Length: 320
Image (cartoon, rainbow, N blue to C red; front, side, top):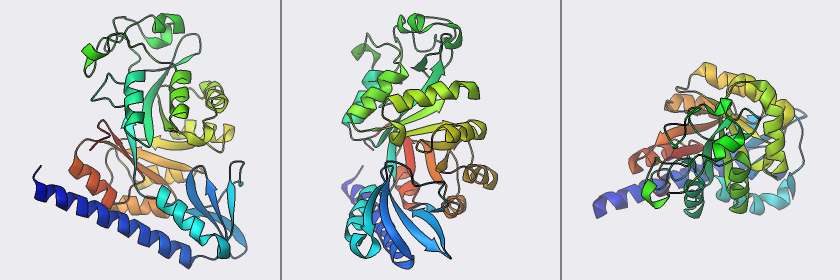
């Protein structure tokens, strides 16, 4: 990239950030504030509209079920604006999620790829979750083992011990990572927690009966407030019954008003899509639905989505 082009790209990024800050400031000043709080790592503002309390944030206004544990009250509005501004700047803007780890530098969905992503400053790491025949959760995109390992068979028909016996033998720069295994969900969550990174779980099953164990695993790892689950509306609803702290996102190829409306029915939710128009981004924001776009891999795409103020971007290359 020429120096001039790099400079123009940087200027566009700076202008986009400035627009986000101004929008946040206008939002804060226009509301009847009751208190400013930090909730699940994001700025939230309790406002009063006609005697009804709402939680407002960057993405719009949501009617909260409760103010749950983990909420840090920063104080009444007239004493908390300075702290609120600091939190707003720290948590505003588009957050980067590493798709299957740093998957252009190490084999996808391996501890090596996850650690590389964490070391390169990503906000979150996405992985795919399959369930073994003995009820354990592992990180693998395909149910079939043969694309990524020296083994065969479907994960759903194999025990955890059988899956862990396989060696990863495909993926980016595989020669540098000759002994990688299929990670467990517990190993992934532990790594995310150690690096203070958010865990993004793409579920490769559709049975709601599995969710009790899954949510308990996330809870036991101390990652409820730092996890996003990508799945279908039915599973999103069940997760919300089990936890009001795990964010859920409707995984779909293309955003529509219908998909946004379906997500909006579930508190603390979003959509995870590969295609969305600027008009639908605005519609999602008005509905209080976060927007996660996948999978971009160019600097130009990154700037374009940042200018549209999407909440999350999922990428194979966290250093764009």
